[in-house]
Length: 276
Picture 1 (cartoon, rainbow, N blue to C red):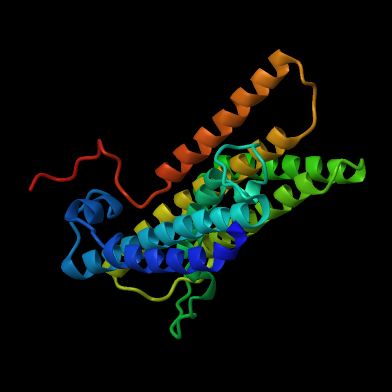
Picture 2 (picture 1 turned 120 degrees about the horizontal axis):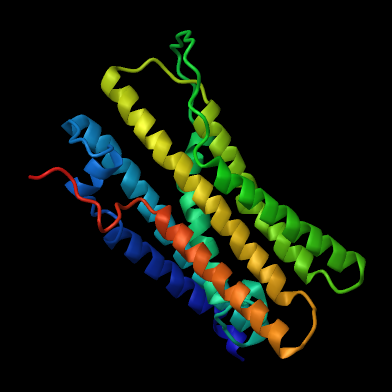
């Protein structure tokens, strides 16, 4: 009976999404611009570029989060007649927490993925200057290790006849991982067009922020997927083991949220710009 209302829920969700995107995410302050500019007050033209970048990033994150929540609601009502929150409870694709976080994650990555299709400049100059290294390689190494471990656990589960759920969760985690890797490669390796000194500074600052942000997002995705795989992996039912698993899973969810926050296009609350 409830499933009949799914189309209506989807329609209402789309309306809410459009309204939210029209109202929220466009407020970029001078403090925000100064923060992403590295603590320097930029010129008006440079500030406009920074502001457009921040607005796009914030809108994509909001849209992704709302879309993820809608997916959880629709899947939960359609297939389970219930919507849950909490890693390891029911179907992961009907869970508000994982779908909401995953939606924000994919939205943020999509805000950076425009780099994958940027047109090449018609003017190119030769330079002996090396491309700056990728930001936060330590976080990326941990993300790759977690993604590989989760995938291995999913494959072993499928091979041993324990069902395809673990493997499906691990494979779903490869989507943001692949997008992250491609985006990071585009940020670091794309040819740099001939730019003025001011434009080069803006480009460098945005690339630095984008590289660190994507690295944190990639790790957040890997932690979230690994936590889900651990939560639904069959194991001993002894109270101490179950309690330890619950603590690790909860820690994984909190870690993913912290990483998402640190990857956000907003200055930390304690950050202070130059005095007005």
